[in-house]
Image: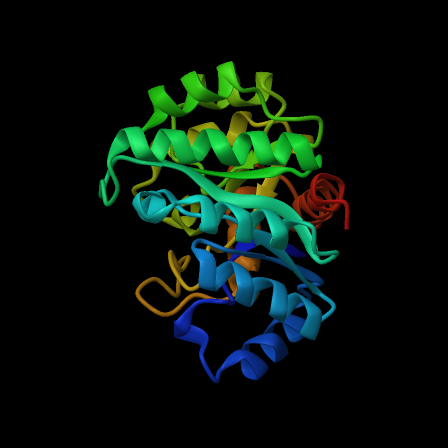
Length: 253
């Protein structure tokens, strides 16, 4: 299995990484995309990717931190992006749920990341929370580059998913697909072509059932796979093989 989006760089894992990594290997997780969300976490993602060969890094600034984005931050992220262990740009995007940075600022920083990903021919990892319209508007204007990208922890409608697929993006599902009240999300999950589907944990957040309310970890990606297999009427092995191949292809690992 490949966890296509986790934050092993998060302070929640401080001094706990050896046990988390042991759990990964025991569960059969062969790779983790360790995603940066601010300057420090992006640096840490790269450092951890150099320390453990099954960890790969992504670097970027989350929309929550868009207001602190400046030329120095941009130069640092750009420099990190050239590291051999970096496989993607992100996470970046829009978050109108918490609005921790002004919307205009979020949009400008999102555009910068899209252009960087295009320039460096790296896939882009996109965060979208309650900002579906503006996210699509920007993506249609600045289309993902040749390396493509992924809508991480997808929460939109089938109509939005279809637009994202038309843009060449992958769709990734996390713990919420296991929740009993996620009716719309389950319906969308049924309709995504298997060759465009990814799985993730978004660790340490969004733990799947039956671990909801606990600290998440990449080993729990098997619960996401099990839920998708059940929803689609497929064998878990088929979903595991497809999502692993998809992640390898997108992130070139």
